[in-house]
Amino acid sequence: MDGCGQRILRVSFFFSRLQKARSAMSTTRVMVVIAMTAAMMAGCGKAPEMEIQQAQQAMESAMTSDVSEYAPDALRMAEDTLNAAKAAQAEQDNKTALLRSYGSTKALYVSAKNLTDQAVAQAATEKERVRGEVAALLTQVQTAVDSATAALAKAPTGKDTKAELALMKNDLASITAVHQEAQAEFEAGNFKAAQTKLEAVLAKAQSLTTEIQAAATRRK
Amino acid sequence: MTRRLPAVFAWPGRSAPGLQLVRLLGAAAAMLFLVLAGCQDPPANALGEAEAALRAAREARAKDFAPDTYRQAAVLTEDGRLEMARQKGRLAPLRDFVSADSLLRAATRTARRARDEAVRRRDSVDRLVTAQIRELDGESRELKRAVGESLTYNRLNGHMMKAELHLATARKFAVDSRFGPAQKELGAVRRELGKVISEMTAYAADEANRLAVWRKWVTETVVASKKSGGYALIVDKSAHTTYLLKAGRIVRKYDCDLGFNPSRQKLFSGDAATPEGMYKIVKAKSSGSRYYKALLLDYPNATDNERFRQNRKRRTIPHDARIGGLIEIHGEGGRDVDWTEGCVALSNADMDHLMQFAREGTPVTIVRTSDRWP
Image (cartoon, rainbow over all chains, first blue to last red; front, side, top):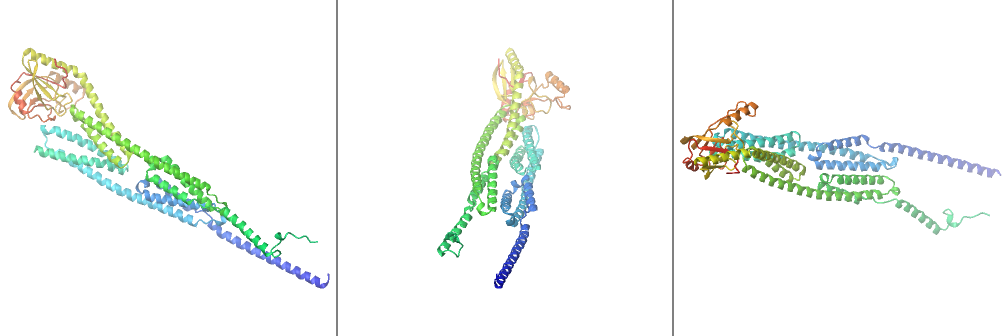
């Protein structure tokens, strides 16, 4: 090969070596970029364990109490949000690790927990309201029973009135017995059952007081 | 000699422009196919239908009336939702929503079945509870009438009142479709009515046991009146009737009121029972009686005293009880209610009539019931 040819060969060799070096550098850069991206995305790829546990525990606790009786709609909303959170989590779980992002999943679990807490608070408020209503009704019935008892005590006694009074005493004893059953329901926290019983007792107690007062008036 | 590839496989730039275009289009089509082949729409409509069906089941109270079917529907909906989410997480070409779609359609069918079951069962329970209320109401009225006509009503009135209260409460629960509590109240109604029936049965048995004694007393009184040709009185407590006999034949009947605890033999003073036995009039009061006119009886007689002594010994009566006395046939009656403390009360007009014939020494026999007359 002549000098010219050798020179051409050397230059070609040099350029091919340069091209290889350049390629190697590009590959390295690309690898570095990929590694950095992976490292960044690894942080977004973990399920929000703490938020999941908190939301599920809150829901389990709400389900075992009487939230469904006193705040059914609020509980339903919390349940729907929790279901949406689980669906979002399932979607992310099935993505390749690099593509996972649990941001909105975490937000949904947090929202579910908050809604559950709100439902529990709402139920407590409503239960307290019903409790107050039934307590007032209990007082009303007790007043009616006391009124009937007092009227009986004041009713003129004598041979003529003993029979009527004995019957009314029997009626009052029966009303008192059912009143006590309603009281037991109230103390057991069955406010709605107590309320229904008390409404029936109240009507009878008031009617008995009127009867006793009418009988007393007749005997005067 | 250099071998050449067919022109179509040659690198671009080395073949004809038309062929280049064909190759490019072919590659694009292949890529598009690969992308689209894996793409399916997630079954959002099926999820919406399943959720709507579950909501409808809940509103029909399927949780209470078809709990197993409802639970099944809820689980299928949840599984379908999760499966759909899992598939959405996969790369597009790998997604397969067939299973999710199938689960959600099954959820819809099951939720609709739960709703239909709930509606059927609720109607059925509603009809059953309404029928039970109607039946017990009828039974209660019938018993109240029977009790009212017997001598036991004062004793049994308390049970009847409780039964009425529980029935009223059951009705309120049923109106609110709270059938569980309604049936619990109906159970209480049955228990109270059961006590009434039980006591009336015991009372009837007691009556059957003593019937022979009362029949004997009536017979003896009638025979004695026939033999002497004189007057006698027989008081039938269950009939609320006092019979005036002359020479063994009934000449007059008087309606009478009794003690307000009439179903029993008198055991002690204050028990409000009219005594049962064979007595005589010891004093006739045409004036000065608190109750118009009165005929005083010789209660307690020897039999009454012996009974009282035995009961005291057995402690079946209060330890401080007294046997009592002052049992009369007197006026101010005719009230159609048992109100005395043991006396027999006639209307004033009937007392006027009776006093013409009854005097000291006239026999007075008081029985709980008299079904046979000689």
